Length: 134
Image (cartoon, rainbow, N blue to C red; front, side, top):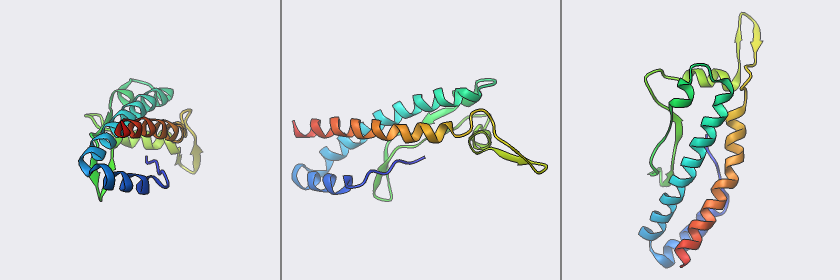
């Protein structure tokens, strides 16, 4: 799952030039963590559409923001003893068994959640950028 915002790199580069890399990175990481937490909660509620035992919902995790390939990122996914990421993939995209196509009741809910979360990221980034300007 990823969200791409066009033009943000130029804005951050200009801010780093004027305010310093550490201050900008601190606010960007704080914003990413807050947005990741919101996305984590939204994903939990979305995957509850195909909740059976509750393990899929319980294993949703969020990583801390970190720089990967020069870009600050936060990841939301599944991690736990029941390895639900494989099951989530089947529920998200559907599957074929013996030539018959199956579309589970929660098909596509994660993709829709990520698409809706783009607006949350932009809103959080705006408030974070306002914090830097202060």
